[in-house]
Image (cartoon, rainbow, N blue to C red; front, side, top):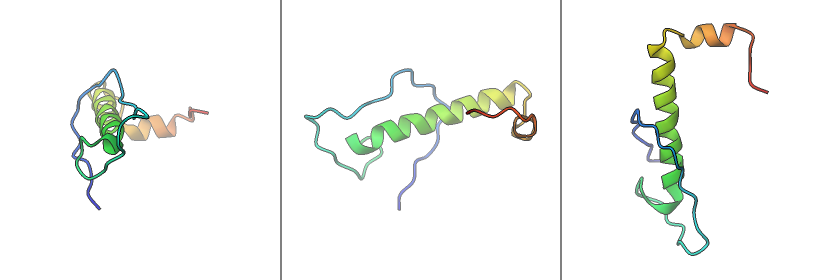
Length: 68
C-alpha cells in the first residue's frame, strides 16, 4: 500500500471532495487522497513546531493533559 511522504507544510484550507468530482485514488494529489495528504503535512508541521519550541512529545504525554 502506498504511503504519503510527509512535508512540514501548513495548509490553511483542507480540500473536500465535491459531489461532482470522481473519487479516484492512486496518486497523492488524486481527489480521494488530497485531504489526507494535506492533513499529513499539517500534522508534521505542527509536530515540528512543537519540537522547535522545546516541548518533546514525552513531556506532552506525561503532563496528564489530554484532549477530550
